[in-house]
Image: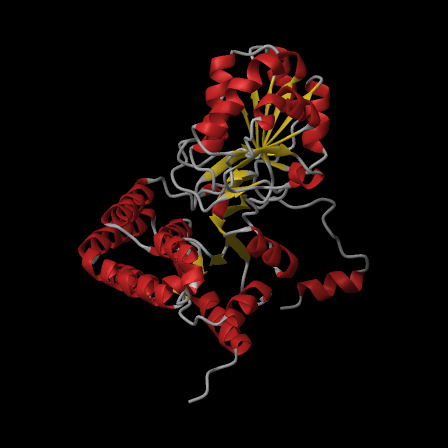
Length: 454
């Protein structure tokens, strides 16, 4: 039987999702919490099944790299795909944590009474049907489904095909556990078709889809932003930049810089650009750069002033410090690379950062209160941190629980996209016959007579 064309497949799937999502948004908080805990128990019980399916995915990827010259790439791909018992435990723990978070749906964010007695309130409601296109691990599959479900949304998830069997096994267990606990069938969809056209049609869909979230690298984010017809909720493509002020605690600032870059170099909120006030450059930069190069194997791309300062190191054959190119100041590296620049003062630092567009995460290391407050006021960023690592720009660090990613966008939400950000607000008003004045009155006797007729 011929396969249904991708566009027809996605249109029908989303049309069915729209009908289901209405009931999903009416589920109570206790019902969702009970289902999520049952889903966590099922994942724990299915551990061996999941690992077995994952091993088949790993074998399939390994066989796709047959040539010896591709051996290194094969090892990297296998290492990325392979799951362990610890990975499954993390999924289980994440589900239980989300189950225990407060239900955002129905929460009244503000309430007031008008002079005419009208009671007005703002109430959180689900967004609706949310598409998620991911290149990342099955942890993101579980997290995306759970967060959307808890917020009353229906998640349509399209994951990376190389994790196909793993995701199918996980999705089957989650679905069965939820349905056994009273959750309607189709509360989320995991798309199993591996063809790229299905992902493209999901991104392009403007029918029955309310928002879309990309979870992956630069190419995926770019494709979603350029082709999506619905709002993109989570755009983590901005830069992460740190400025070290002349008035700073140097050991603290060095630790913050190292943690921001090294703790997880591939993360979207790992440090991309380090700006240092020139008057402390000679004292601050050499020991920091030396540690970055030798201890943590971070490639440093430096401005001319920094290259001159570190010239002796470069001359002795340290090839990991190289002159920065113009594009380095605009690049989100998401890897073991760091751009370093000396600036005259806070004015130049702000000018440099703001010229790159909205920042994903901005950090300042300073003991000067005025400098810190100016930085927080003027910085256009998803999150601004003072004397703290950029890696703390995350839902769990802020006490929000899990998140589906970070956003530097000016619309809808900045920073971590957690449960609250997966909802929107509607106004609810209670009255006792209040009217908008002037109230209409009949202009002629005939009108008055007509109004009296049954």
